[in-house]
Length: 374
Image 1 (tube, rainbow, N blue to C red):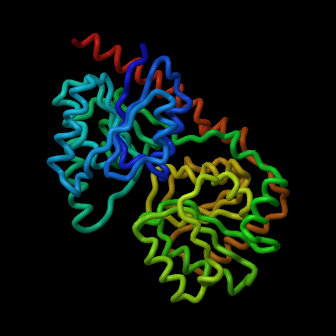
Image 2: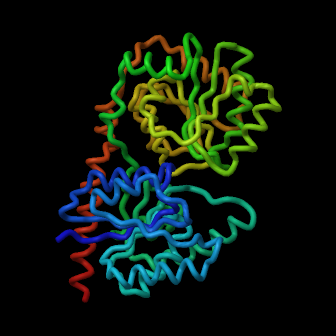
Image 3: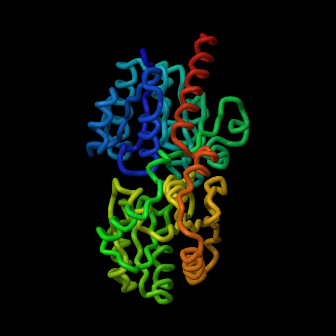
């Protein structure tokens, strides 16, 4: 019988981490490991039916900001009722609080997974720092999407220990095979003819630095009036960014596409991805873009491990929006014909089947180690 693993996420929605966890679920050997999920909030996950069909369950609990004590009490009840052998938290700094309940319930394998390299500022950041102190006490195994992310979240001593491993964010690479037919079809659906399409995929949040993206696009469209900016994603800054585009008088050139399930097709329709993030772990969108053959312009805040395509470049956020616009145009007009980078992605470990097998092997070893110590 498969071992049930409790995956603790934010809301199991359309964000990079949740998509990663779902891809791991789709590709892990479900005769060995079956996933259940903790999702915070009342919004029903878009993966509800798929999870059910694969044999998993989603438990919805209050958010910690809504009612901390009710949230933690419900989490403890769920863990105790189902007697999980593994609890795997993807909440970054907040993992310490959730894994405390797993430790109290006697879960033998408690995994904290680092997906980021920074925290918000102000009061929210202070709360995150306080919560992060509980990670070392309540987790006994650790994963990071990169070595840098692991060091940021867990410290150098834990990162260098045998209890910590790197599990790369990965994708189903075959979905991003480039096709001129798909590109033409998707561009037609978007109403694009000869326009230069710049794309950004990610949550509309502080970390993604969309304000800077709009400023560089304002510069870029002065140099190339054919340019359009496609922004795929949703988040708390959506209304603010739409208003900012109006202030810059570029609203007719910026398309806020919202949360999308057709990212592979959108990437094929685009000509370049620009990602000026203030901080990241290992952005799935960047892996997807490179695999589909898109040139990518990264901020140098992003770990170099993310790059595997020769059409990828890093630029400092200390450079002006004008310089970013210039380099975007130069990369977008590279003379080489477009081709996908599926094989380089696989060779670099970014195929989800590779990482799902690694995760199952980690679970095997950790369960065996905890069995021996009991």
